[in-house]
Amino acid sequence: MRLHLCVVGRLRAGPERTLIDDYIKRFDRTGRALSLGPVTVHEVDDRKGGGMAAEADLLRRAIPAGAKLCCLDERGKLMTSPQFADWMAQVRDDGAGDLAFVIGGADGIDPGLRAEADMALSFGQMVWPHMLVRVMLSEQLYRAASILAGSPYHRV
Image (tube, rainbow, N blue to C red; front, side, top):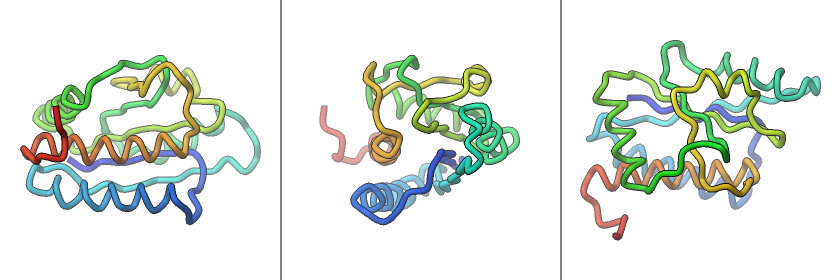
């Protein structure tokens, strides 16, 4: 199952980029044997200032046709890392070819796009900068693959 990070904004060189690249590289190596990956990052940028609705239109174009959709949102479901790993495995085992994770811009995700999601995932009730959410999601993807592979990376 291919994974897609459909995100608002362009990430420049810096510590966030370094972390994301490292975790995605680790995920791709670990996930390959589990039929997970590769991860593709789709960055969209609303240069016309159309707000959440315009961002949602750009994000919809970045999401592969037929992909399962998970939006990152503070109102979403809270999961432990093992629960997240199990959920990803279930989506894969149910036959999804693509799983897209959507991270909105500074104002969040348009309610219409959020309503289209198969799941909304939360990293807590606090609001996080979307660049940090990218880092946290990338790490959790690698952690999920590690859990599914039986690696000691995740400690209980």
